[in-house]
Length: 114
Length: 114
Image 1 (cartoon, rainbow over the protein chains, first blue to last red):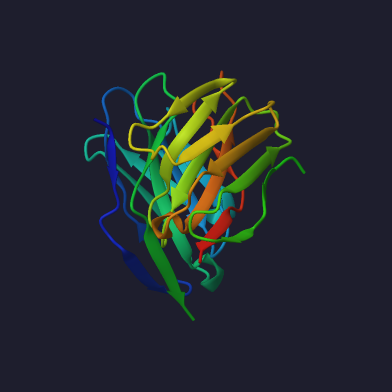
Image 2 (image 1 turned 90 degrees about the horizontal axis):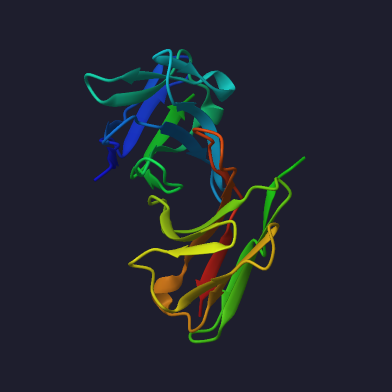
């Protein structure tokens, strides 16, 4: 069965410092991996995805993610955090080949401190 | 801008009184989803449509029904809401036929039960 794990409920980082939000996955076949961000009382907003190709994926708002097949990880990163990056972040994986369903991680709350 | 719109943003209903949440999209996406999200948890898929084909999740209560009269609109009907149904309900869309397309989310309807 496909699964995705976000081991940290919350990540705190000082403004201007680099940030990492962790995600590991378990899939059969090729992984389709996504990161979404959710601000309070809003829907999920797509940040970036990995389908194939370069292991370093660049996305919206300066975020990037590194796909590591051997470690089955897809960590979200940003070189310099902003207070406005404070939000809830979800990693997601497609639930199997040929499906339109996705499995979401439990979410990580990022708090960027001024 | 093309988008996914959910109405109303906030809905209050009484215990046991039927309620309908609506979702419309201008993206012309053929796949539509309804998720339930509680207290910043991971979104839980209730059902999805691939074109007109309805796909119910095995653990979605019978109390939840859905209608999709055309490509643009989708409705979530809760026949007899219980206190446990208080949550944020998210609608999402996706275009099939292109590998790795992300989902596009509306801003949700927050449902409260009195």
